Image (cartoon, rainbow, N blue to C red):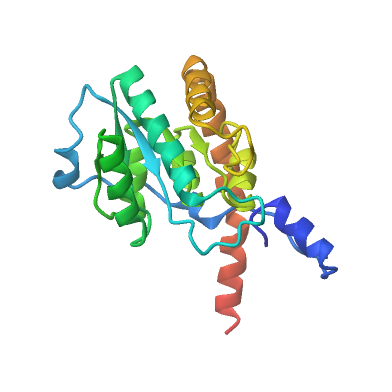
Length: 231
């Protein structure tokens, strides 16, 4: 199986045999939320608006000749976080998805002078945190996946084609390409503003699409079980 149509297209371009290959979905879409520990809950009092922020190191990734410098992308994110937080009186929650994200989250949170950085958490706990948020501003692919599970729209900064592919397939808002000339703080803020004006419909559409994607992962489970039993 493959997790998206773009992967099948790539195999076809490579002239690989594709007969019998089924397109399902990223298996992580089947992850279930977990109850949050008290140590996290006490940092998220009721009555406040939150939005999730996921950033990742970009240094060393092969992003092509037109790639914008990572620090310029981060500064754009920080500026957008400030504006959105102030306009909405909302608290940005910087969520590290991998060990290498922690330092960057702390650095950008300090620059934004808004919100705070949450500790590393299990996948189910991250989903439960995102459920408390209005939306996600993300770079990590799984920030979009977990936002889908939480029923929370994600404005994705698509540093890699896989991020844009999932965002489009999962019916998140149009992803933003950080290497395009029109990528800016204003573009991020405008995307968030458009989302807020249509939040109810966006969440409803996202939940329905997530249910469809989760059903597709059942094929993966059948195949894994068959392979395991064939040993």
